[in-house]
Length: 165
Image 1: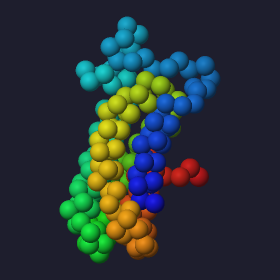
Image 2: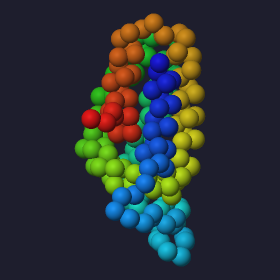
Image 3: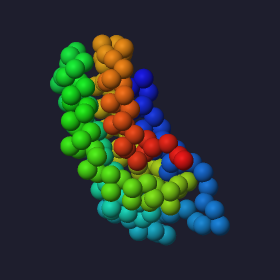
């Protein structure tokens, strides 16, 4: 269950930016470095603002810290629960104002293939590597409802995990 939530992050990020189509005849944002557009030296498409990239980076760092703390807690489900609750409070919740802005910016960039490719290339490997740290949690603490609820709460704070209303 926990791994499914985390893998959903990866899928949703790619879908959010890589699928769909622009309305009103809007053109796709060109890939940075192309003759038609300008982006960062990192190849970030112009539609992905530095604020979007910085906010996404902060969420990925928070996720990496969360998974490292879970891994460090080992097979002690109560210690894992404490780590999830602490990191949610100390790392993830403080990002909420930036996350709300990111959610709106992601809506504006939805369907842009260059943005989807950039986000996937930039963040998916790190998210996937961090998610791999949690596989033992699926067996060791699989029956811990309180831990699953805490993890669901933590993941719901990530803009890329929020369910559409």
